[in-house]
Amino acid sequence: MIIFENTDYKIQSFISGMLSNNSYLITSKTSKKNIIIDIPYIPRDLFSKIPRDPLNKSNNVKNTIGIITHGHFDHIEGIDFIKDRYGEIEIYMGFEDSKYLDYSGKITKLRSQEKIIHEDIQLEIVYTPGHSQGSICLYFDVKEKKYLFSGDTLFPGGPGKTTSYLNFKKIYESISNKIYKLPDETIILPGHGSGISIEESKKEFHSFEFKGHIFGDITWKK
Image (cartoon, rainbow, N blue to C red; front, side, top):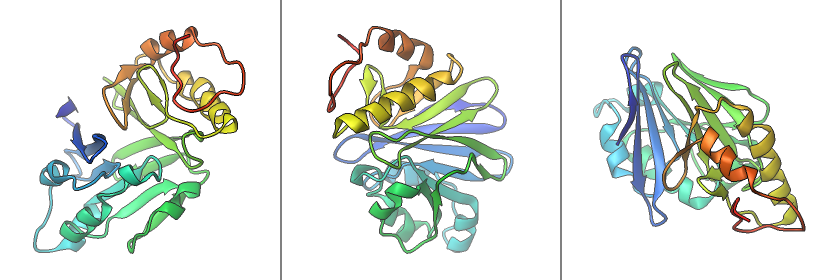
């Protein structure tokens, strides 16, 4: 599905995998470069939309990179599918989550980098530990629109699942101190399900009262 398109960029979304994961493809119409965000199990629809050279995989590798929002299995299962059919693209992911990835290609482990720049596609990295230690979100400002690829950090209705009180505190702080500092008109594009604007997400969050040693599947509703 096409989420956004102008004279410079196209953003498309795809669903695949047993957990109905979202993956995203950003394409520059000027440079012909591509960024894949999250690669779930057997992403055939995604693969069919990536411009590629079937005779020379090295050309594909130059044009396309992958970024993983976090290292849970459902977000990385399709990497070998892409590698076998397209080539060993460079993969970017949070340093703490890189241990989950068994990959023969180049892995860039993100620790303090502020941006990922692929020719004329520029994404700001927002470090959002909580759902996993190495979770990241990616902010893309295309002037007419602003998008945040949030992985499993934030969904309509609440945050991603956490496994301890300390991790819930981390994801709460990641959302309130980082994500909610972005412009209200920013559209959150999560790792599963539909999107929501930051303005609407803040309204949901406003009614939440943080008390007790809570964690797990939390919603912003009282």
